[in-house]
Length: 312
Ligand SMILES: [Zn+2]
Figure 1: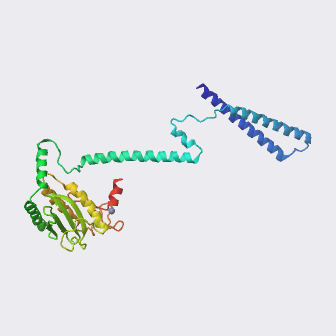
Figure 2: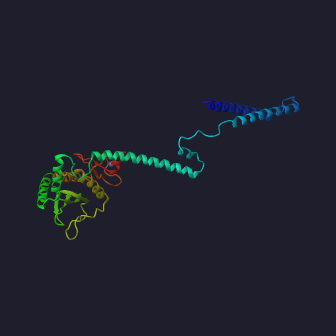
């Protein structure tokens, strides 16, 4: 505290001497500008100037002495990195900027990973049943069974699904293909909007591709094309959303219910090109219709950009 008080007194004195210097300098220039007053002898005028110069010289010496007693160093920084911005070299300043960016980036990654972790905890993406209790045993058994179902059993489920769909949505049709023996491939046509190719293992949807109504979903030999994606951006985005829907509607215990829900959900694309986005209330955004669908009972329609800007 003593050294602080001493530094403060020095600073106060320095300011006082600076003020004195300023006043004497002003007086000197004023005297020089006005010249000798009326009736004043030249010698008297010169003595007056000499006196002012001496006053100025004294004030300057006092200021210099007082200034030398002031602390020269800055207060000690709390960390080494804090002193980097004080570095006059430009190249070292760049290191500080990079460090700051790196720190910000790291903090964001931590924030994002925390929110993703809590989100994933609520929405299990595992395609197996939970491993506790008798329900788990039942689920495991059901899961194994539904993965290796006989084709006749699969056909039966799909026939029921088709009948149910025909009543509610006659514009939706389902065709069954078996290009490689056991595995089932469904070609679902949603109105005159799109064709959906679904590849199954037992009754579980393994792969889904959405194409435009006018695009070829079959090869020349009549086999379903299970691999190539749509050439249109709009259906590529719908495919992306449908892949998320497979995980959302998956059920190890009730796969037929999962399949029914998935096809029902696909049917929400019937008005793909005339539905408005629930966020921006427009049909087109970036020349694309709302390709996203929520998984609610009445799914929301949205542009992926609108949903991501909403989430921020
Ligand atoms: Zn929108």
